Image (cartoon, rainbow, N blue to C red; front, top):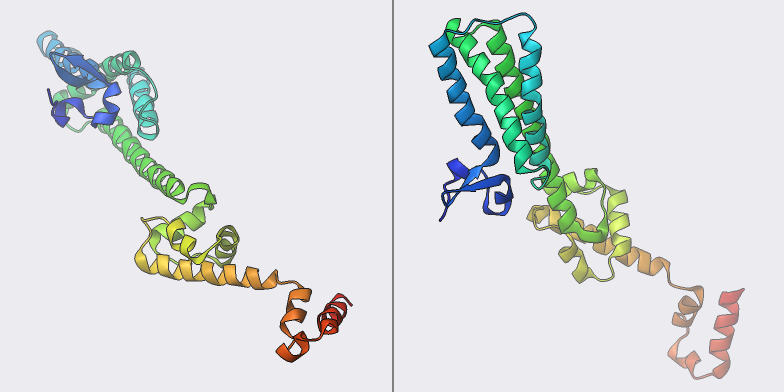
Length: 243
């Protein structure tokens, strides 16, 4: 059965983070979070639970941290952790959020509730930004393969900017033919950037090839067809080049 995303919360390749229930893939952390959250809120309504107690803020923060940390780690490495830890961290988060929501119900937008929710939202935003940057660099590094460019060069290629001269020279030394220059640039780089950088690599490759030409080869090239008929001409040219 195809599980809706709003229940699984994960793509097919990351369904290891789900628990199979009734033919559906249910997010493991949500399985621990939402049933407990609704049950605790209902219990506080029935018992008319008290408001914030002394030192309770630290308990709320401590109950929130495991879920926040494990979720952040999963944004960088989806295969990390296990479902037992996700369920337990979801239960702890339910305890913290149930108190925060109860405080808000008693006194809307009170300082304790606002501080707790702001901490969660800001932390989640920072993690998402860092994880997106991490995935982009990982994708570019995979496309470049063994060329091993530094992060600044990867950023330049991805943004469509020209590579620094040092990076082009380094890449040119690794390219054996002009055809290889275009293939070695990542598909995610813009077309103008690919053309400019490929041209730079080709020029760098030609320059390195010309610099490797030996003096003997240059001397031989200066021998005219008429001189080539004389056996002593080639030897004289080689003697001059060696001196």
